[in-house]
Image (cartoon, rainbow, N blue to C red; front, side, top):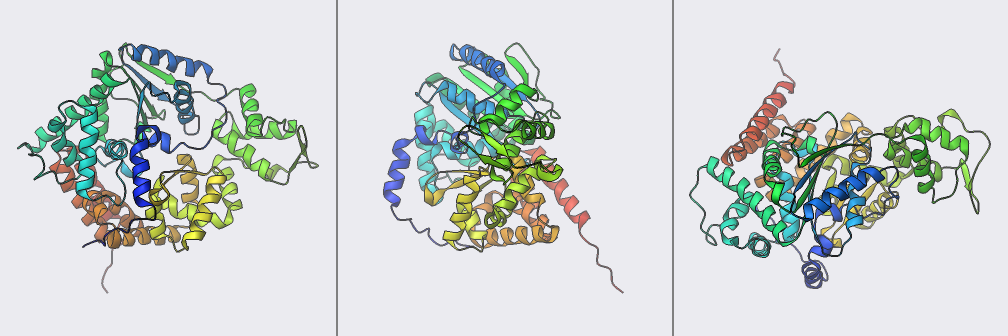
Length: 494
């Protein structure tokens, strides 16, 4: 299956030069790129932020630190990390390296690491293999003195054909896996020798086993390296590593009433809200910051209140049904108000929390202008963030719960239709995904009810994982394959 040569967008050469010149300042990591919207001021987390800043001071002096940041969904883990990054500033005095797990990739070996490397190297959708290899070499030459030793391993990890450009070590799969993990840790150590590193790994509870193994190695090695690693996860996940002197567990609790009321007022632009309304919001949200923000925005967009010069005024009495009782209900109410954009949000939710404009445009039935208008509406409503050049834009749901709400709002038959459309488009137009991410394609085939093709893709994924000695991921793909086949409807004759 071949793919037509990509058409360079208007202003391509200027855009690429700008992308290359700006380098780390604008594209230092997916974390910065995917958290562009201006958040509300951090509320009720001063002690937690001070603790992180204290650990950063130790890390800068060469006493590496690990912080396990635990908290339920919507409690503000990502917002605290944004505040930390804002506090450290963008003066070039440190390097940010960020990794993001997702439930769709929990059996994709080292997917968060691969995504971070691709972003750091500046890969663009229209780059061919040789261009990507050149960018990878440039990244490693900047970061590591003996870069040539790393190129074959990293190229193999990224699915690039390094043969003919650099000799590929003659290693067994087990040796290659061990050497690759060691090279990744050495790369992090080399980066920290140049500048102190703030390393962030979000949603560790969804990480693949090999990524967890890699960061387990880092936990042991970081002691005398200028790295602060903050790893976030939900409370039902237990880190499998020993907690030693340089490891801190930080748990985020729900906001108390005073801080919750303060947050609601800040979302309202600093103007007081009617006391009855605040009481209802705080009762419903129960101290969960994301819920407080969503309910407050929902009220501000409603016809319940009127804005005056110095405050908001309530119109008459407030019905019990005016404020949703759940976070999902609040998110759905806001999606319903973005009626023209709701279908786009639902399609995007089927693709994943992070989705490229290229993939969305390929699977959407909307005209380009209508699609961009819908995305603008979702962005203006703070339901998604976006980043990157217009021709290579990446979008992300503001929170995993936003994606979940959009996805769960779809009837099952409609979900199957959208997953089928995504799978068909990938089969026809994205050969790289078929070759290097068969487990992602398998997910969409399985959700579409394409049992045969899903099982084939999962077997391909298992073979690929086995060849990389990612045996736990290979086993997970095989288990998923069996589950898909067992769930298939049985057709009996006569």
